[in-house]
Image 1 (cartoon, rainbow, N blue to C red):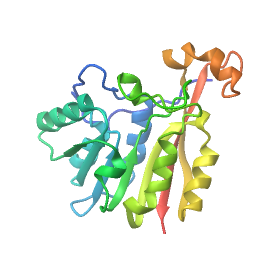
Image 2 (image 1 turned 90 degrees about the horizontal axis):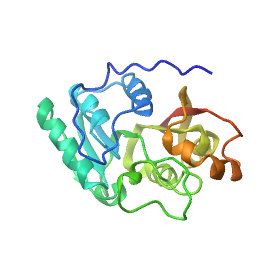
Image 3 (image 1 turned 135 degrees about the horizontal axis):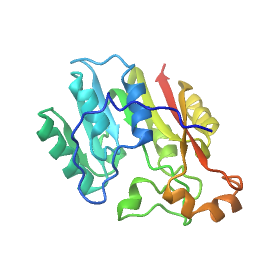
Image 4 (image 1 turned 60 degrees about the horizontal axis):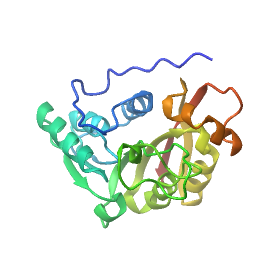
Amino acid sequence: MPSTALSTTTLPGSLVALPGVYQPQADTSLLAEALALEELGPDTEVLEIGTGTGALALQAARRGARVTAVDVSWPAVVTARLNAWKLRLPLGVLHGDFVARTAGRRFDLVVSNPPYVPAPGSRPPSTGPERAWDAGPDGRAVIDRICAGAPSMLRPGGVLLMVHSGMCGAGRTLDLLTGAGMAAEVTARAEVPWGPVLRSRRTWLESRGLADAAEEWEELVVIRARLH
């Protein structure tokens, strides 16, 4: 099946990335296109969870929103700050766990391209570049935390935009968000070729029923959830 064409025109150009920092890829572009459809302005407060290079946070800042970005990786924090300086855009970048660093704050929009690749081992890694994609045996270690925390992070009428692999179960994400009092739906899908990480885990993924034999394409989904 051919890959859905994804535009990168909504992403700030000339981004730099320190070694080990996740660089914008197809999932970033798909989420950027969804972000471009949201109404943003000077009165809009935005949070990006897991900012990486800061591409999505800077997209929102370029449109005038007041943006806070958070990441557990120091190299990502430094990278996002460097890109904000380079593009001369205001961006607050925090280091640490998103729940702890945003406690007591509420936002109009929360955006996230979280780690979502299923990985052997009971816990996601605490160091290394794999932190940007490995997310436990079902790929939901961070996704489930975002679903649980979204209502307390959003103002009434606020929106969560999140991208992840269909391998993680879009239906479960929708159920969790709906159960938390949000109106949730899949607003975009794309098919992309398997990358080297998935290919290296083919046997394990097949053994867990997360992939079919000889599967070569991964579905990406964007979830949009609005707090009532």
